[in-house]
Structure formats: C-alpha cells, structure tokens
Image 1: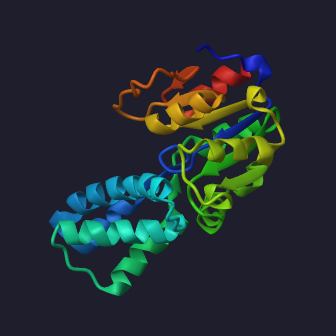
Image 2 (image 1 turned 90 degrees about the horizontal axis):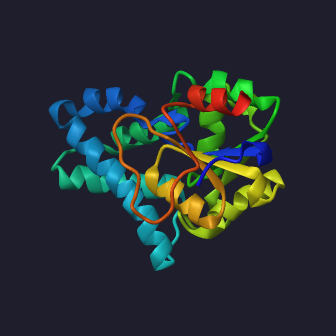
Length: 227
C-alpha cells in the first residue's frame, strides 16, 4: 500500500510511544526500585498491553487508568518488588505528566494549518487531556478521541471508526499514525491510510497488511506530508 497524500484531510495520532514517551517514567521507577526498575517496567508495559486485548476479548472493560494500575500491581508481584500504596499512586500520576518526544510539538504545529489533527488512543480522556496540556499540545489538536467511548480497546475496529466520527471525515481522507506495529496493522485492516513511526528497532507484523509509509519520527513524516 502506498500513501495517497492528496486525499488526506485529517491525521489521528496514537498517544503512547508515538506522541508521549513512556520511558519518561523510568527515572521515578529507578528512584523507587533501584536495580529492579527495569524489570518492573518491562512487566508493567507488557501486561498493560495484554490487559487491553484480554479485557476486550472477555467483554470485561475497565478504563485505561484502572487497567494500567492493575498491570503495575502484576509487575510488582511478578518481580517480588514491594511498594506502598503511596508509591503506586505516585507512579500512576506520572501518566498525567509524560514528556512528549522532542520533535512532536514542532511537527504538529507544522501540520496544523493543512490538516485536522487528533489523538486516537486507548487511554481515557482525562489522561490524554492532561498529558496534552502538560506538553502544550492541546492548542494544536482539534479532537482528543478515546476508546473509552465504546468501552473496547484497539485493535477492535470500532475504535478506529471513532477517528471518522471525531474528525468528521471518511476513512479515505484520514491518516492514522502510530509507533506500535500492532496498532498500525489494526488501523490498516480497518481501512485507514497508515504511517508507522519506527522509533528504535522494531519489526512490522506479518498480518497481511502494511503501512502506507514509514518514518523514523514525526518531523520526518511532517516533511513528507508537507512537501
């Protein structure tokens, strides 16, 4: 699939790993858990993702904040790491203050004049709104769209349909952007044009769908779209 840039009128961005750097929590993890921090982080992030899939398949929805807290409890137990409720709360609060990747604000500002821009994320609205405001992205976004609206998580097709409803554009006029390979696959399968932001080393899924374009960061993608 190749990018048909001329049709694009709106762009929906995934949040975590695409706009916001989850690794910005790592400093606090290291302060709290020292040499166990990396192991806790790995379990936490993997289980957070697994819980979105499991809860969607099981039909047992919890919002993303609660799901993420459950994943943290799992990570602490799996690594035999002790933490107080105060420490758990402190870690969870970091999700409201995640740092955006360095190029994100400039890239969105460049795209703002030509395209309608949105976040499309599994996270619940309060997490997204506060993280966007913390990084000064709220003024650049036309919509913040959460999977919480339908109580399912990506890659359920209904979540990607929310981009059409939120931006009031049909799929053929939308570009979905994510660093997560499974997310790109889900959006492509739904029928959106997709861009994969390949941050670091990763490999695209073998699911018979492929992104229309690959970029190393959002600045590179903005350059391509604005050329």
